[in-house]
Image (cartoon, rainbow, N blue to C red; front, side, top):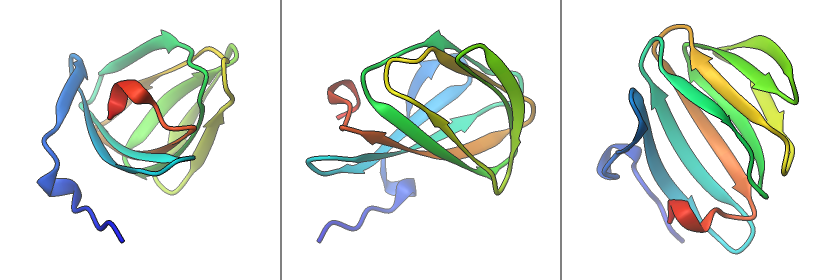
Length: 107
């Protein structure tokens, strides 16, 4: 059994103010922690993986398929596979995202 402590994973800055820690993955799912500084932007993008997320702390303005709404601590979101999505951190935010299947570029 794999047990990973997020603080032990070296963060990777994906775009200015957005840090990724790939926690673990199996054959069908990958778990990733993102930390976004206030005002950081994840540009609109799409990928073949389904992406489900949970906001641990903070608040995002999340856009999925052209629909934008706030997502706050304690709330979840879903970006279906191949659907354009992106986010802006309205304050410092930490999210946990699950990708299925796992993203090869995050391993």
